[in-house]
Image (tube, rainbow, N blue to C red; front, top):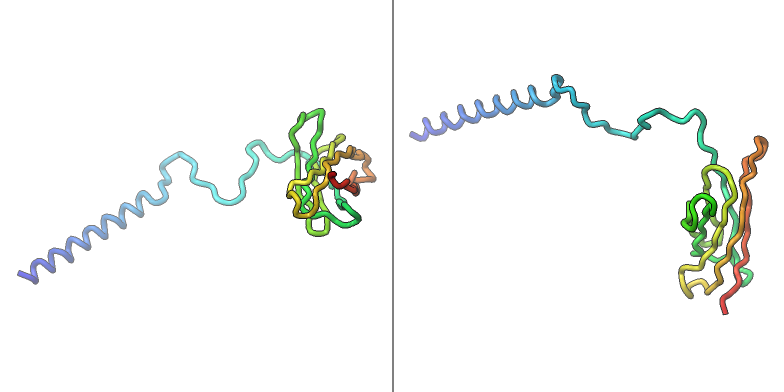
Length: 153
């Protein structure tokens, strides 16, 4: 009796293995379905690349306060004519008070420097500065903008 049950289980296991293999083979790639397959990797633009790359400008500089670099200052830039009061790009100063902002397009921007870390590195007043991109083929418009923040009373 044990031999018959063992043989029956082995036969059933072979039949199920063959059915699952056939299903995986037939429905694995589904070449007869016209739906697009999942794409992997970097997405590409639906309507093609723009004819020329979008120009960008780099604003860099240092922020000092009390004659020393100030880390942790929130630096943001926005175009008042286009975006109103929201910032377009932002960054924080590093341990040496340096920052880098990458702005797309051209125009004049307002760069804001705000102390957001509290008393950790000193308390400083907010500061705003205007910066305009130079649209000259010989110059990329990149520029330095060094700022000295005033301590808050």
